[in-house]
Length: 373
Length: 127
Image (cartoon, rainbow over all chains, first blue to last red; front, side, top):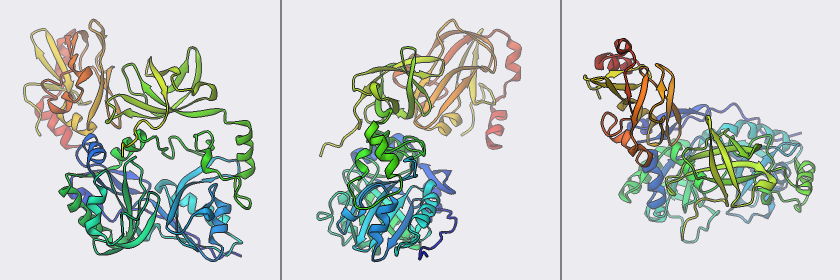
């Protein structure tokens, strides 16, 4: 028998939609809701985060609470990482894999208390993750509760994040390390404050009750503006994470990709106690080595490599571009691509097929951008 | 934001300025705004023959790739080399410094098929 609750189909409509529209945002349909892709300029928003600070609405993300006396053990059997190794108030990057080792979603798992975990899933996969957890936690004493529709999430990212957040919170930010989470208040509202993000900058993610998201956003937006920052849409979120070499589900990760293909084998903890879904398949991949590898490319000719463009070496097709853009920080076109394992050495020259031509590109180590501090 | 009245427009959001037997082509302010920050423009070499309504180049914003469609047929006489290093000129001054190609007018009758400023504004307003 299971104590797990069956999650209902979730529409992740942001509670901030009217605020985004009032700010002049261009909205797009995203994972069943409408989210801001940009307010005025993706490039300006990108630079604001790199140089100053930006405010993101991430209320579309999924939040699952797993709790109970054996929550850690149950979770450990469902994901590839080792949640039991987390101390309270700490987080880890993780993945949910299918039995064949393919990635169903990438996750952040926060240990809120000894017997209470929060799993943050991508909006587009929130239902898949919720369904998988219902199945995988069946027969355990862990209780699953999908809080996605009850949780608002905003992020403050950039070098001025501490300056922006500190006056508005009672959480000790100096004592909150990277991948830590603490309970407190933000703009007077009860909140979980995590030092996590998806931009390559220092920053915080603030989880609140959905009805109170607006108050938290308003308070933070005023502080962000005072620090010469901007609200930032999903467009710049994508260019920021790409420069930081972070995978995007649907581009670098999908059910046909294992964590080892994506260069994220370190996330898989074979030495943890107990079985987990995907273990046998992943042990095989780890032993044999993946057939392809995720690399960074800097395009050296004229053109921007985009998702799906072929990567060639001579007459041989080596792989495919997974994400690409003009890097606002580096000023050159960058891309991530899967190439055949032997072609992944930094310095290797490849061609990217862009429309009817071929453009030379150089394999470089990831990430493209690393903050200096 | 109304379209200049001295230009002609395609339904694909290119503009044409005819000056004697030469035409200058670019994309409209509406198109540039819809694309967002333009970071790359790919244009044909001078001398290439363009065919009405066929793609002749590409404009890319941070997020999206869009084809450019020839508003009329003719041969490219020159291209705006400044866009190679400053593609943002298309956002900043779409009807001026952000021009894309100059070309001959192979068949002046094709110009009659294009929209005037008012017609283009109506097209944009209709979404």
